[in-house]
Each structure stands twice: as C-alpha cells, then as structure tokens.
Amino acid sequence: MLVRFFDKLAGFDSVEIDRFFQESPEATSQYASLMNDRNVHNSVVFLYFVIFSQIIVAYGRIVGNLGFPYYNTFLSGLALMLILLSRYSFFKTHIRSISLFLFTAWAATFPFFIIRLGGYDSPTYPIYILVIIYIIAFFYFSFWEYVYVFILIFGSNLAIVFLQQNVNADDFLYRQVVMLMATVAGLAASYINVNLRRKDFYNQFSIGKKKNELEAAYKQLETTELQLIQSEKLASLGKMTAGIAHEINNPLGFIHGNLENIEGYLNDLKELVRLYETFPKTNDDVSRRIHAFKQQIQYDFIVDDLAKIIQSCEHGTSRIAEIVNKLKNFSRLDESAKKLVDIHEGLDSTIDLFARQNQHITITRNYSEIPKVECYASQLNQVFFSLIENAMDALAQKNDGGQITIITGMVSDGNISHDEENYKVIRIQISDNGCGIPESIQSKVFDPFFTSKDVGEGRGLGLSLAYGIMQQHRGCIYFKSDPGRGTDFFVELPAA
Image (spheres, one colour):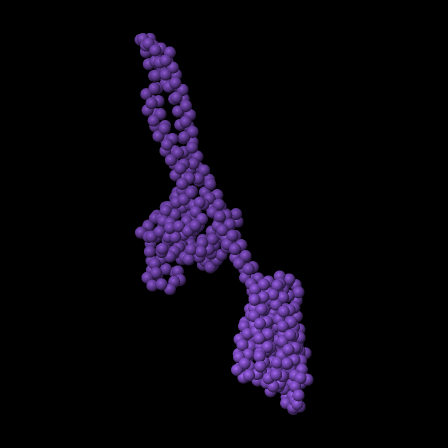
C-alpha cells in the first residue's frame, strides 16, 4: 500500500516502466551507461569536497593542538587517489560498486572519528544527515542500494553509543528518533527519486525513438514526394509524346527524302565526271554527248536544288535541336540544386511544349521586368506545366475563342507570410476564359488525387504537387474562379 501511495505521489506506473526496461535491452544498457557517467562526475565532485573539508578539519586540529590529523590525512589521500583512478575505464564501469564499498568503509570508521570530537555532541555529527541528502541528490543507485547505504548510515550512527561513555539516555533516544525519521524520509525520497529518474529516461527514450521514427517518416515522405514529382513530370512528358513525335517526324521526313534526292544527284554527277574522265580530249561528238547527258539529268536544276536541299536539311536538324532543347529546358533533369533562374525562360519553354496542341487556343504573354529567382528550375516548370495544362483542359470544349493569358510582375501585397517591411513578391498569373471551377469542389483543388476529369484522364496530382513545390520554395499558390467565365491562378515567390 505504501509503495502504491508513493507511485501515485510521484505520478508514474512502476509496473509499466519495469516492463519497458525488461522488454528493451537497448534502453537498459543506455540507462546504465547514463547513470554510470553521472555517478562518475558526481563522485569526483564529492571527492574534491572531501579533500577540501578534510584539509580544513586537519588545519583546525593542528591549530587547536588536538594532535596530528591522521584520519583526515588518510581520507584526503584516499580521495586524491580515487580522483586519479576515475580516469580509467574500470573505475567508470564499476563506479557503483566502488561507491558502495567506500560508503561502507566510511560508515565503519566515521564513529571513531566522531568519538574523538565529542560523540553525539560533536559539531560534525550532523554530517550523517548531510550525507543522506547528498546521496539522494547526487548518486544514482538502485532502490535496494539506497536501502543498504541508509541502513549503514543508521547503523554507524547507532554504533557511537557503544564507543562513547556516559551517554544521556534521553539525548540518545532523541537523536535516534531524528536519525530514524531522516532514514525513513531518505528511503521514501530515494524510492521516488529512482522511479522519477527511470520515468524521465523512459520519457526521453520514447520521445527520442518517436523523433527518429518521425524523421525517418519525414525523409520517406520527402523521397515519396520527389518520386511523385518525377512521376508527374514523366506523365506530363508522356502526354506530350505524340505531339513531340509529330514535331520531330516532320523534319526527319523531309531530311530523309532530301537525302534520297541527294544520293540520286550525286550518282548523276559521278556519271558526268566519269564521262569527262573517259574522254579527256573532247571533240564535237563527245561534247554533244556530254551536253545531252547534262540535259538528261537536268544538271542546272541539280546544282540549284542541291543547295536548297542542303539548306532544308540544315533547317530540319535545327528544328529537331530546338525541340530537344525545349524538352531539356522544361525538364532540367541535370539540375539538382537551387539556382538563380529567369522565370520568363521557364514559362516560354513550358508554353512551347503546348505550341502544336489545341491550336485554336491563343496564349498571350504579358511579361513585366522581374528579377531572377533562386529555385529548383525543373520543379517550378512543373508548376507552370500543371497550370497551363489545366487551362488547356478547361478550354478544350471551346471550338474557338479560347484564351490563356500569362502575366508576370512585382507586387507588395502578396499572400506570402513575412515580417519584413517593403517585402517584394514576384507574381505569375495564369488565366483562362474557360468553364471555371465549380464552387462545390474549389476547396478540394489542391487535395492529393482529387480530379474532376474522367477516369483514366488524370491522376489528381498536378495541383497537389504544385502546392507542395510552392511551399518548399517559401512561396504560395492560390486561385480565383468564376464558374462559367474562367479561372485565374496565382503563383507567388519571394524576390531574391
């Protein structure tokens, strides 16, 4: 019942904590190591206190002609030796056993020292109570080790009566009652102290474990988010594959056809050269044959057309290089760190990917002068892609008159939270005159996996990832929509 009272008083469940230490060897080992480290530190502090106090007492004995302070000298030397030994691992590992041995030796010898100074009337007699307090406060023992030490202290105090003569019975009983109360109070305090320390370690260990789990989960979440971004990027690029294939196939087609013509032209020119080589000395008949062959192969046309074909091939290869460069600028897969980026370049490279799609839709760019922004360019391009793609989808049902307007500029009234004065924000506005977003789903637009498209047409990750990307860039994304008239999306970034 008394134990349950102390448990309730201290506010812990000793059964739960005992089970925790039994089921977690790692925690038990860490707790023992922590207690040992604290005991070593506190033991060294205590030993310095012993040396200091014994030097003062020894000086008093010498000045008072009370004899040579053998006991004080011995204690000071022993304390100094233990301080030197505390540097070794054996001492640190067995600090509790060594401490218990030293307390036993002290309890056995201290009564003789007290007797020489007057027994129970000695001014150093209260040291017994001070030692109880010090042990509770600074030594990390188990409860039963505390019990052993306090019984030693009480027994040491009790032993004085057998060494001192003419002890007053009332005085003796009074002192024993006081010591007994101090011992019982020390035992109660030690029980609470031990379990509070165990509970404190239990809480810290549990919090540390939860922290590690949360950090691991956060890293996993970051990894998953990056994978989703890459997945969405690949999905976006996949949707562009048909258009891009058409873009590349056109120049490749006429390059291939031109190369076939070049091959025929070169064969004819080789034949012409062969004729010249066959008839090194020309006559009228040979000249007529060569002239006839030149007319047959349309020599003048070949010379003129060959230059045009080569120019056409150069144009085709340049077009392919331009398409590949647009893809590279959009994806920026080679950039893994934040860099100063021109927002307009990112917008242009993203818009170019839609150039051949939905040609009935007009994209108007209204750019203002803005500074470069430190960002992950590929992620920001992904945001632009998702917003333009959504605008395209909103205008897909319009046969004509579809309009997307992109406006950039600097503002001072953005929605980014800040504590600075004259805080400048870069705002990118992407507007369409499509069907708008119904009010019933406006609150879900940025939710992961939410989509208003038909099954198979969208995964509902574009705007969710865009929202996460803007959070990562300390920016924001929001929209205003008028159902039936269109939607304005706003992307805001802190100016560099």
